[in-house]
Length: 458
Ligand code: MN
Ligand code: MN
Image (cartoon, rainbow, N blue to C red; front, top):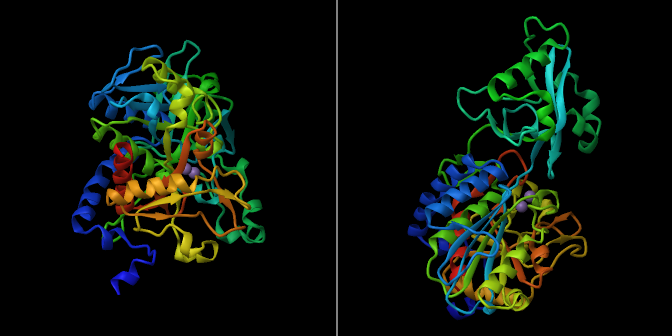
């Protein structure tokens, strides 16, 4: 009988496969993750947290041209929005680098450059959403403002409003059901439009102002608190994110509900696995990148030449050949995947979907329709990762986003693969992906940590 069972591939949960100690360790590990989620709601905040973790673990800032030797631990802070950690192994650099790449930007609402206006005694801020959001999910809930304002002088002003218990919060109004008959007739794409995602930020007129007195009150507040004027908002990056904190979810506390699991639920385990791994044979690199949600473009996105620049510099410093290093490197594109949701079972294909609690999910390919836009990892690479994870006792599963022809998506995998680096997607499954509050299972988060540790050392 047991011989026959070996013939069959069956997904099992971490609870069934890994036992109580691993589950308890997962609950413990999740506490650090929840703190990270609350401290790092934007890519800039995630980089700041990443620098703290890296420095505490003995990583030093790297500059192009620095001497590099085995055992060295460096981080490269790219414009405060993207960070690379790397640790030099003892084997020849031409054997390649073990790389993980996660992203630290999440869907949100960005302020426009000229955001402030007054209408009927209310002051609003205009927004332009960032990433793929379902617009209706962002209405009628407390929001916080995060980001930076850079004055003409170059002075950077950090802004966080709405996180402290004593802070005010911000808000987008929604239509009352009593008057929604017309809206109810429309499909969702037309019922909710981007230009109505305006943030309510004030309603009290400023004494002595004769025009736009409510707006003047808001500008007065911003000037008193941050020393900024309206024109300073032209050179700012300010984002609205949910104001509430990450929380345990469920009576059994087995899950976490929070903002930005996509993709901090992979970023946190990859950076903690990196700093918890020492003395490896291979050189390891952990990338936390920006702009994934808008296509990975720009100087802080995965399509920037910075990754190849760094590999070239490392190869050069260690007497290797950059093309050889890339050809022999392996990368886990650590981005989230969709967890099968029984409430929307019709869009998933159960056999190939990530199931909650069954460990980290491997997507051999992503894309939409006929796998459009996928880099499709080779069977050889998948077999190699299988061996790596199985030998380490990591609970993992295969994963596909949804049913063929229903939709699709992509990650940073193809941009890495385009550099001639073997890459496969390995990430945690998420429920309600891209919603203001997303859901993950603690045991899946922990298997991600165990998987990345195994990969760095394998
Ligand atoms: Mn993602
Ligand atoms: Mn995403």
